[in-house]
Image (cartoon, rainbow, N blue to C red; front, side):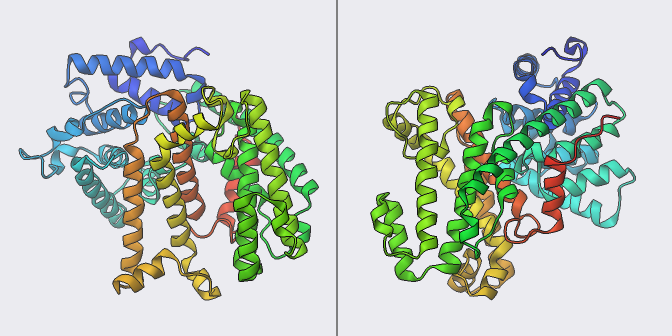
Length: 467
């Protein structure tokens, strides 16, 4: 598909803004090659003249946008870009040089791509956060659009949001932009509606499988969260090439929830040890002494996992069944032919998997700790922290939030040496983003509140109005 404008007529800032709009409107997959060409051009122009961005009319805004987009798309960018906005020792940002609210918002967004080695970005986030909180608190914003942006970014940065979940929000914001490209906006709405129709078909297929499985009818103590599970898979990969992957992930999430409830709400210690042995040995003989519902649960898990493994084996032309079928998107990993290749690949990305899993676990704890404690469940990380360090819940929560921030820095620092690794890391990051989304305002799985229902309707039921 060809671009809708002539980028050769744009200055460097306009090119960056165009790429940013394409990305936020959910169109990046349609213009991947064109985006790369534009950003390559920006990098080339910057190498010839390092001040070409900062000399634009909106200095900090342009610089921060330049840093964020290039970093986001895998280019190596130095935090030295921000030295011009700091004192001589690069210790403190000069607030007068940081520009208007638009620049501060973009500085905050850029700071979220910190990979742990950029002390400058820590200082940038501290300044931007404090400034934006004060602006919001004292109501020093005249423009309603700016108020929405500040409120949105402080709630959760773009880097930690699932982009596809945010597309409609960006459409509404873009409609109010004075420089709106109506053709681009209409394309974004059409693209969303086409994708939504495809996602509805995916959900119908999963729903038929779930009903045929009949598991939930025999386990009335567990949560039935079919749509929420599918939404999780949609957050990991929303593209048309990921249909099979979404179905596999939705099935995985459903089993995670069911088995979690078996362990938390139903099984005795002896029964759970038996169930654990059966899974570890992958042997149906281990479950003969278990209650009927736990036997059905294991059989469903066993058959579904083996079925998914065979599907992936067939799609990839592998000579053996993968032990971890749900981790790999067959369309993105053609170089993985067998278990040994898979083990070598996972060795490269295990830090990313660890940090993504850590974020998921801790986001869950932040949202569910109080309710779980009242139910008498196992202690959460927050309660463990309170007891270990003899601190208040508030301090413990801040400690957990800092661990999450550090985990994000570790993931941001992962170097993607090839397209397969980049695809995997993107999915791992999206898994963490889904966790932020689910647990931002409470337990998105445990409690089917209005926020999660509203989001489901927006993503899967209500089309974008073309106008």
